[in-house]
Amino acid sequence: MHSSILSDLNPEQKAAVTYDKGPLLVLAGAGSGKTKVLTHRVAYFISEGLTKAENCLLMTFTNKAAGEMKERMSSLIIKAGLPADAAARLQAGTFHSFCAKILRIDGKVIGIPPGFLIYDEQDQKSLVKEIIENQNLSTDEYNPAAVLSVISDAKNQMLSPTQYSEFVNGLSAQAGEFQQVVFKVYLEYEKRLKEIGALDFDDLLIKAVLLLKGNSEILEKWQDKFTHIFVDEWQDTNKIQYRLIKLLVGNRKNLTVVGDISQSIYGWRGADYRNVNYLIRDYKDIKTINLEQNYRSTQNILEAANSVISKNTSHPILKLWTKKHKGERIKLYTARNGLDEADFIVNEASRLKRRHYKYSDIAVLYRTNAQSRVLEEALLHAGIPYTLVGGTKFYDRKEIKDVISYLRLLVNPKDSVSRKRIEKLGVRRLERFKSLTARHLDSMTTLNMLDEVLKTTGYLDLFQRESEENLARLENIKELRSVATEFRDINEFLENVALVEAGPIHESKNCVTLMTLHAAKGLEFPIVFIVGMEEGLFPHSRSLWEQNQLEEERRLAYVGITRAKETLYLTYASRRIYFGKRV
Image 1 (tube, rainbow, N blue to C red):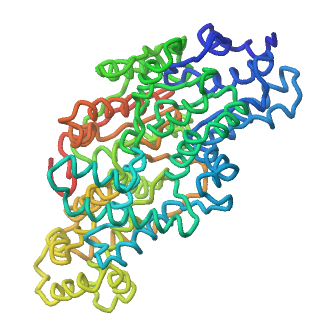
Image 2 (image 1 turned 135 degrees about the vertical axis):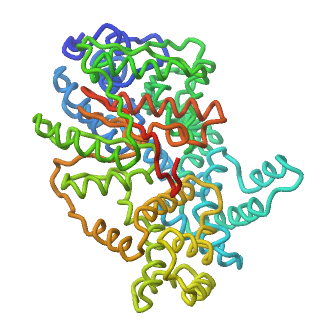
Image 3 (image 1 turned 30 degrees about the vertical axis):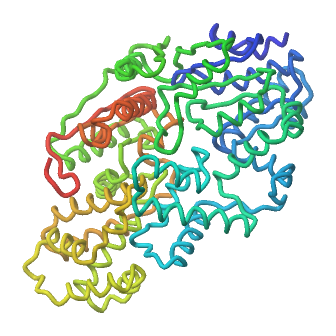
């Protein structure tokens, strides 16, 4: 036995690393060392001769995570005195990269050429837009992103165009017009992908499953190649990914999965936390080991996280604990309004900097991207550098630039840059806008003018189909209304926008981090602020009447709370101008 691999593990981690009697489910709480367990388990199995490096398949969700795991395993393997090239023979990658590999080698069996193209999201949108236009339909009325979102959902449920049509018709006596259009576009979209010799990201998974399911020789070949399978972030897998893993594992049952249902926060993009329950159902002899010792946060922070997540009833709950001290108490701030909340964060960031913390030690987390606006402005005015993770700065977002262009052109009809942008939004919309310019607007407030522009041009119609992207864009436009309430005069409003847009670009790594709670998963910071903790904002209004969605909001709060290592701030406002209305 190579004791170096086991030397720095706690008893539960060691039990998870060394278990070799069949399938294993490791429920690993936030900060409990799940990556450490997974990488040590692979290294342990190789060092003990339980498997060869080339027979191990490690699946995760990002190339970065796969690369980091491979590096860790390489270090462990060398430390254990094994040949350095063993790590190079390991197969570690994302679900999509693995499926692409299978299809390049064996896809010809189901008519997929080895040199197939992979269409990314932008390619997919362009193709769908082209199909909609070729069918003489309006891309204003049938937003390509919304149509593509429905097609992707159908694919993730493994529904062909015909099956999708049967499904929506089965829900009601007659499917709606939008669903009928989606069916026609989906049909043509699949036809065009085949003609081009391209697969989209959903196809990579679906076609790989169809290939393995329908060809026993090919399935056995890949099962023999990868006799031991290890999966990270199991709670984020979807229906197709679970099918893929089941096929590859076969009767050997040499499967290890690591996950934490309490961190399942991607239900809106197909992840199904119930895959943990299905795993227990399908593998009767599976061993479950809980990792509850946390190495990141103080006990006070963990008790707050435990208190929130314990209210959920649909999945197993881990009770996190630590050997660390109790730490500071959770700090709760009741702001008078959203501006006061942002000022509080600015003042605390400055105070923490004087206490020898770096700005990069601080993260501000929020539920929706629209909330970043007031925080960005407060930090800019205070001269505090910040970075926006996983999003675009508020005034750089497409829908914000569109609406501002309308307002700029109203004020200055000679603004050719704004005119060109508006022209791209459609001839009919431009004609309606021209009728607005002839009206007497001098007496209007900025908010009245903005509302009149939206109403006259019908700009919001671009986002009428419900999708996550469209809902986010609408929230951003509503947040722009909040800015408009602060500046009655249109010229002052546009001046403020220009000054904020021209704010400094901070190239230093010493910046306060702004990001959504979803984007924060997997990260950690000494100081964390979670802002806007008001019913309707967080938890989000869309979750209040649906138990499953409310439980996901609690999981999101749990993820946010457990990002904090030392100090956690929770803030909310007594009153807030939210989406242009005082609440």
